[in-house]
Figure 1 (cartoon, helix red, strand yellow):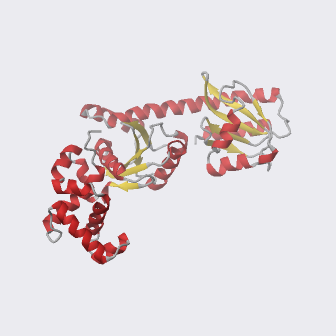
Figure 2: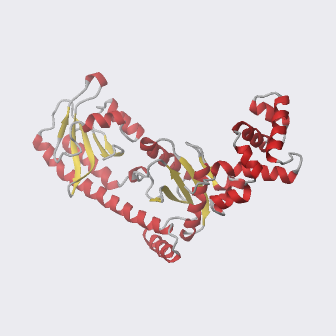
Figure 3: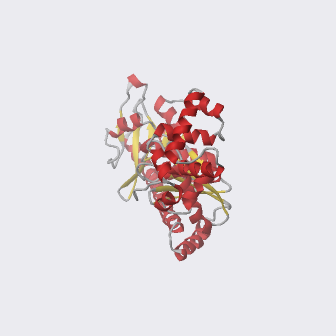
Length: 367
């Protein structure tokens, strides 16, 4: 949050003698200022959770605030404990960047007083517009870091070193969602560089910024609109020039993650092979006619994968699958028959384990 925006909100609260809250156009909290002890559940939730709920957003937007060019009065809703409030749109060059909210249940703020506060809203909108433009410019430079052209990457690294100067080493994170809407910039630390590239949400996180909280916040922002997020991380990138390779590795980690999960490249093991070649080539290299037949029997494939993951322990495998040992022995014989591989042979076990490990992550249809 820019200190200037906090100052503007405090000035508005003092001028209109009412608690004030500044939210961006997605209803994420930007700044707030108290005036007395008046509060209601909507204001409390916005401050505690750093955003208004979807229900509140829908309720307020029904009053036309997104298109308003002047103050809009929002009536109280006693059934929800919601006090009446005044909304001052924060606009610049005919674009709404946010809303300044004043709790005013008694409607003490006159039209003339509200008009005096509108220049403060214009100042806030200008600052928010500038920050949005700066974020957009940085996003394009970060996208250039991910280019296949070495000269483009080198120029972007040089530009970012002068403009952003992130602390090294860097962590690269990739978050995957069904749709690639950009992350809301107000909710991420200003040192975090972001872009959307090839449908990946890419974050470049400097050493001075904690990675886990940054990822958690980014995940929550995306889940608000997109559902479960698959995330992958790679570190360390010693320089901005290394971000391209870091992105390629982080996206492999994200590709192998389950919905809601974050995977680290360092922990992928054999799945790092996904970075070395295309899916079709890896399938041709690691699959055999026997493993292909096995994959057509999901229960047996799961049994084989569990057995190999547990280092061939019959006891632990039967327990993990919740089956009797004799049932497991029967399945293991069927697996050997289908694959023409011997589970007593270390080489055959390696072939089978590699095939089963990579198979769920290979797109053999070229998609």
